[in-house]
Structures are given as C-alpha cells and as structure tokens.
Image (tube, rainbow over all chains, first blue to last red; front, side, top):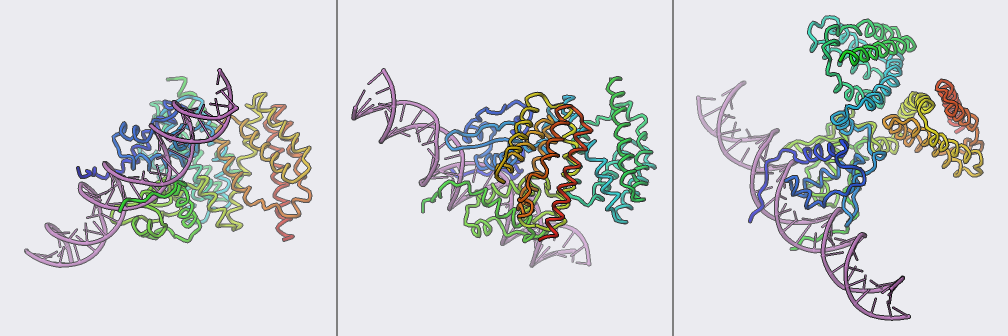
Length: 236
Length: 236
DNA sequence: CTGAACATATTTGTAAGACAAATGACAAGC
DNA sequence: GCTTGTCATTTGTCTTACAAATATGTTCAG
C-alpha cells in the first residue's frame, strides 16, 4: 500500500495547541506520563513525524520532558516558559481565576510606568509623531471598535518608543494577555473614553521629555483602570 | 539500500543551536532566504526529519518563517521572542555590545526593586528562611565560587518568594543573561563582598515585611553595582 | 532466599523515500 | 500589456526501517 499524504495544513501547530492547552490547562498534570509517541499519534490522528515536530516545540517551551524508554512526562510548572506567548494564552483560556489576573496586573503596573519613562527619555521625533497620531485617533473615535484599535496603536507606539526590545516584548506579551480579559463589560463600554485624559497626559510628558511626569501619569491611569475594574466586578 | 540510523544524540538541539546562533548573531540577516530543506539538511549532515524538528522550534521562537515554494526566510528582529532564554543566550554570545548590556541592566533595574517589594508583601516563613540561609552562606563564603553560588541561591530564593511566576520567570531570564557577562574582573573579584550589606538590608526588609524599604535597599544595591561596573570598565 | 549479571522487549532517536498541495515563474493567448 | 493556464520547485505529510537506550523480568551463583 503506497503511503497516502494528507493535505498540508500545518498539522503540528494544531497538535501544539491541543497538547499545550491540555497541559497548561491542568488536564494533564505535572509528572503524568504521556502515552508513547505511537499511541499518541494514533490518538490524535496524525503521523509520528508531525507529532514529534509538535513535541519538540512543547519541549522547547519547557512543558514536557522526554527520555528514551520512559517516554514523555509533563514537567513541573516551575520549568515552564511562563512568558511564552502561547503558554500565557493557554493560561488565559483555561484560567479565569482572579489570582492569575492579579499577577498580570501586577506585571503591568511594574512595567508600564517604567516603559513610558524610557520612552520619554529616548523617543525620536518619528516615534513621538506615531504616538500623537494614535492619540488623535482616540480622541476622534466614535465607536467602541475605533477606540479599541486606536488604544492598541497608542500602546504599541509607546512601547516601540522605548527603544528597548526586551521591554517592548514583555510589554506586548502582558498587554495581549490582559486584552483577552477585556470582555468590555457594558458599563465600561458606556464611558469608554474615561482614560483619555490620562493618555493625553502620558503623551504630553513624553513629548516634553519628562520621564517622571510620564510615570506619574501612567500610574494614575492604572489606578483609575483598577478602580473601574473593581466597580465593574461589583456590578456583575 | 537499507536506511542507516545514526546514534541518538538529540541532533535537532544541535541544529537549533547552530541556526539560532547564526540568525541571532547576525550572520543570517532578516529577509535572507535560507536554502531549501533538502540542501540545508545535506549541508548540516542531518536528515530532513531532524532538520524540520529544529525548524519548527525556531519558527516557534519567531526567528524564521516558512511558506511553501518560497522556502524559509529569516524574520525581522521585531518578531523574535526576545525574552526566550535561548534567543537571549545567543545574543549574549554574539553581541558583547554595550548597547545590549545597557538594555539588560535597564530591565533589571525595573524588575528587581519591584520583585523584592512583592516578596516583602507575600513571602511565607519557609521562603524567608530560604533567603536567610542563602544570606548566611554568603556571609560565610571564603572563596569566590562559594560566594557566587550563595549569591545565586539568594536571588533565586527572593524571586521564588514573590509568588508570581511571571515575575520570577522574567527575573530569572534577565539574571541568567547578565550572569554571562560577569567575567568577574580581577578588580571585582578582589572585594567581591562589597554588596553584602545591601543583601542584608534586603533580607531585613523582607523579614519585616517592608516593601518600600526592600525596594530602596535593592535600588541602592543596583546603584553600587553600576558604579563598580563603571570603575571596572575604566580600569580595563 | 538474596542478589547480581544477563536477556529481552519497549520506546525514543534518526534516516530515507514517496506522494499531496501550494505557489512562484514562465509561456501562451487575447 | 494583461490575463490565464501549465509547470516545476518546495514545503507538508505519511510510512517504513533501523539504532540505541533502558526498564523489566529472568536466570544463575552464593
């Protein structure tokens, strides 16, 4: 029987999503021995080749560990690459626990004020202009979608202006993860422009190259955001 | 001809190191088209199977992008997972530029003071004890190796005590990267205990649950470390 | 009965060959 | 010049085959 070949749909990515979700989601617990490659491949209806490509990626993310004869085992959570975008996304998908959101918010509260200070110090004219354009778009936004798009652009422009790709990378990951929780409650949606003054203040501070003022403005914005989140939670 | 099988040495990891190093090191520049899988496999003296396992991992790190017919291309640096431990290590290996070290130091200066504050707030008795033990080992250290080992343990204990795996993960990555630059110049080695008072101050603040004091102590420690680094550089 | 050396079976690591589908490039026709 | 269709190249997938490692069980000596 000649080997049949399936249509190329990047199957290994699907396998990564499937297994990664199960592991980070807690269905497959640390220490659990996974079935052998042969069985697992059959179970997932893919070839061993594809499965192994996925396993290597999961191993690179620190989720699994493999030895000959023993097979694969889920690694302890302290070995996971928690800052990996996928790992974070899987946690967001599976863990709406308040605890995890708190950790994300804590990270944001540490990073963002420092990031705007860095931007205020090192931004160049073009980067400032990009931030300004995003701010204008926010001011003119009528619909919620317009505003969300402009807000995202604002933050992206700011993090680019830090000229520190480590900082902006971290920032982006955290921001993306937090974004998945913005189900945008009806209450928040109603007065979605509440943070506009804060954004303006941040922009002004960056324009005038005042790191301390930028930090203060961002901290105020986070405090407000927290207050709003609390109100939203209480109302739900 | 029956297919021969080579000895299992996790070849794909070597391929990852090889190619990853070339890309992050700048030998293979963004936009460069890589040779096809067949040619590349031959070039590296591995099978296409192994090469593909490596390529999937590199793609997961954002270093390359592959499409049918076009082949693989090195992605622009802004898509890289800069916080990935390997990516960071490759950069450290290839880029002793002052610029990059500055970025790492900036990250550290942002994260560490915040981390010790979190530890002061949330550490439990066992975690405090772990920090204390590491501190004692530092005080009693006679050789440079002993001290380095205890110092590492101290920082690890502190980051564990934050009870925020995102924070500790980031902290660990940055710390590891910076560690590769500690060639430990003769000057630094001579009086390697200079930071002991700062460590003690951090420990005390965490013990007494004083976040602000912990932050201040850590900032002082970083300032001192910076001053020492500058002196070391000037002398070299 | 205990323990150590040995044999065996299972599992991952590697290689190689074949086919499917996508797609850039080129040629033909309008 | 522009569109359309063919073709060749490249990645995606599956299968088979073997090598090496190693957990497990077995056998034999004491």
